[in-house]
Length: 293
Image (cartoon, rainbow, N blue to C red; front, side, top):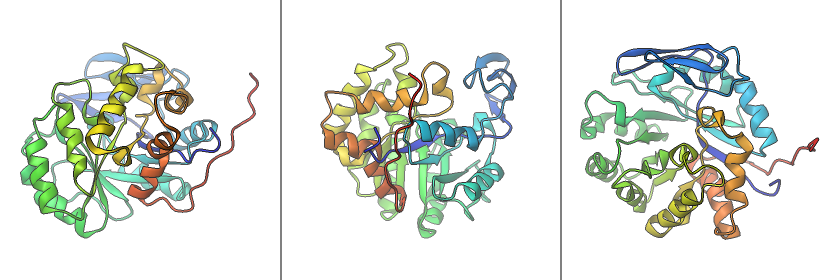
């Protein structure tokens, strides 16, 4: 895979997990597990024994999988990681783009960040039209919005309004439109707009029951291509949660080794589109590591 430019458009980092789900706390309990609102879940690979999902571990995984750059998004279930992400970017400024977390407050952060993450499906008020001032502020700053919408087409009409009102704002819609839910194609169709793209963070999670090499996920990529064009689709891993059952390199390989995607489509999906959307500069392929196997 050393001749591909690969960008991960959707992953997570935290130094300490202090999130909430349905009003209940989410926190690490050791061996990569977390108390998820009263239920113990494997949140990370078990070798992350100290509950820290660090940038150093991420970069090691990226180097091995030949991933040159990444975009760190956020989630309410991890808690606000703005401070840690600023430190992480200072350490690896050429490898990562970072999003601050919008928390339904007027004082969300922009300084030092490349974009803003909105967990739209988890908002207390899911009427996205009310977020027009937020979208306008991000647009004026020349940054991007990474947004995970509610399942299906529930918020698609609101997004159409915001896209029309903010034509110069770059918007990345996450989780491949929640592809396993009814109406996902309407989320994908939003990418027919000039500055709207789709990223596939969590694709292996959504097709987890099928497991590697995820033939139905390839079906979904091809269907999305036919809706909005391959030039609007970006690969994402949703690291580290999806790495509880597969390795990071497997999340790349099921795309790179697919015989159903043309070579140009693989290159566009794995990195070239993300380089253009996020503005990665001087990005080059990473050489394969010699493997003991």
